[in-house]
Structure formats: C-alpha cells, structure tokens
Amino acid sequence: MATNISRPRTKSHTVEESIARRLLDSSAQLSYDPLTEVDWETPLDENFHGASPEWSTLYGTRYWDELTDAQRKALTRQEAASVASTGIWFEMILQQMVLRDIYAKDPTDDTFQWALTEIADECRHSIMFARGAKKLGAPAYRPHRLAVELGRLFKTVAFGEAAYAAILVAEEVLDVMQRDWMRDERVVPFVRTINNIHVVEESRHMKFARDETRKHLAHAGRIRRRAHALLIAVAAYVIVTSMVNRKVYANAGLDEERAVREARANEHHKSMMRSSCSGLMAFLSSVGLLTKPALFFYERANLI
Image (cartoon, rainbow, N blue to C red; front, side, top):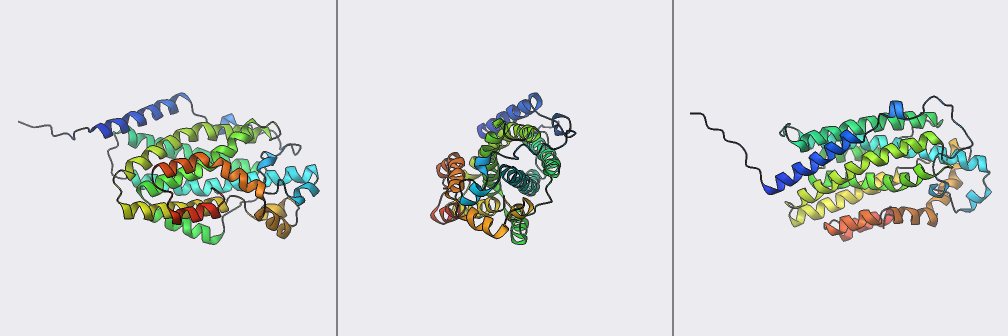
C-alpha cells in the first residue's frame, strides 16, 4: 500500500506561508499597470520639478542660491532621472538574487509564488522608471564602471540575509524620498504617479525583505553574521553613492566640477539622507547587522 510521506509543516514554515499569502492577497487587491496608470502622452511641462527641491543634492548650497528657477527645475528633473536609472540597475540585481534564492524550491508554496510576484513587480517598475527618465529628457545614466562590476560580483555571491538586507537598504532609501515627491505639487504629475505606484508596491517588498532577513539570520553564526554585515554595508555605500550621476549637472547646464564639489560638502543633503534611514538603521541594529566595520561605510554614505 502506498504511503504518503509529506514534509511536516513547522510553526515557522506556517508563519512564512501566512505572511506570503497576505502579501499575495494585497498584491491582488492593490497593484498597478504603469503603462495605463501613468500619463505618458502629455508632453513634459518644464514648469515643474522632477523631484522635491529639498532633495536636490545642491539644495542649501551657495550654488543653489545662484541658480534661476528654471535651472533648479532642470536640475531636479535630471536628478530624478538618475535616481530612476540607479533603481533599474539595482532592481535587475534584486531579481537575479531572488530567482537564485527560490531556484528548485517548492513552487506550490505561497512564499515561492510571492517571490515571483515581486519579480514581476520589479520588471514593471524598471520599465516605468526607464520611460519616466526618457520623458524627463535625460540620457541613460549608468553607475560608474567599478560600481557595475561590484554589483555583478554582489549578485553572484550574496545569499540569505546579505541579499535580502541589501534589497531592503535600496528600497528603504528610495521609499522615504519618493513619499515626499509623490505628495509635492511642485513635482511634475507623471513623476508623482510613478512615485505613488512604487511606494505602494514596494511596501510589500520591504515587508518580505525584513522577514526574510530575520529568517536567514536565525541560522547564521557569529562569523557569517559579521561578514554579511560588512557586505551589506559596502553594498549600501555603492548603491547610495551611485544614485545621482555627476553628469546630471552638465546636462542641466551647470558647471559640473563646481556642482560636484558643493554637493559633496552639502550638509543639508547629508542630513536628509540620515533622517530617511533612521528606521532602516534601527532595523539593522535590532538584528545585529550594525557592526563597527559596517558603521564605517554607513557613515561614509551619510546614512547614519
């Protein structure tokens, strides 16, 4: 007589399935199609900013004070396009890490199906960001070569909590600034719509990333935890320092060298970045990922 030998469902497995099921239900109830939700047809209105001015890398500097209103708006449009391009780059890394994590796992599990749902979301987001950057009149901003190669290495070697915590870092940083942009009537309407879509759908991704980080850390020893804490911090540094390409200044008609110099010394922007990451840093601390070596890179990236 045939015997049905099934894998017993542990309490933790049941909790994971429950979380994934709630995320799947949320996705079914509230998701967007950027191709129809975003107004792609109306020509760009250059009377609007591309992002909230307070988030500009030059806001609060002497150079910002010298710019005309039109120059400030042109700059924020280029900066928003650069942030979108960096988002595409990291979302491609994210998708590969998630696919590798679920490879050969049980496709009937809700966690497996949620992971595929997240990847589908990220594909739509990348297309949305690409079309948005093009409509803002920006070129294809790419991270510098070293960042690209480090990203290639990271997506190959990162696993478990290193992969999911790095995903969380990128998503948390974008989330805070985009919440400001989507509510700001000074920002061009189609960009506000893009930000709203991304904020709503990424909130589910961040929930999943936090839960996966905790789950993987439960099985991590001291050496692995410390090594991954440093790896995550380096990834965060590369991501954050790649968000605004230096070419945005020249493309907005500014003196690139002076703009880069003043942006690097801009205490206002550093303060904005630190405040946006307070919740993220609290989470990383709570799970033991804020080691001294890691703190060095977070401080260099002005995240803490």
